[in-house]
Length: 208
Image (tube, rainbow, N blue to C red):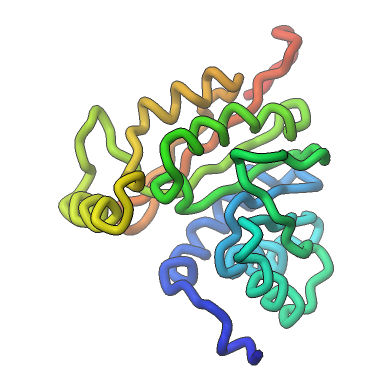
């Protein structure tokens, strides 16, 4: 299979620049980052190429791994790691990471899987690790744009369990997992980047 035959996301191609700014800023002191739901692998290749000191670990559900692996092989970058099979409702990796990145996953997962995602994060995070979540969110139960309202309708038509999540509900899950919100950044196309930091067990240590 040629690289041009691999699955390609136009959205991932459009948002890779703005996302790299966030990733480069918050993961600058990280060694190992896990991407949950690597999709086509485009983000992994772009971020790993731009940040050669960072080890970018890819993952997705078992049936989606080969296109990611092929894209990484074509890119010939050693710091983008071959994808591992990972389902948030099943066994979590034993390795710990300095950061976790996930893009456009929360509105695809069932809500129970979103809960499982946040509940499991502390088990794989090093002290004061950073978590970046990208995608559309509602605020106070309201859409942030007409396009997001249309997108939400399309999601629910595709599968009843899908839908744009409420920021307040996601932030509650994060706080229950000892993740403190550092930034809620506005992104292009009515998306957001939520950046969290794992609170340290010792309250005398700063996590900001």
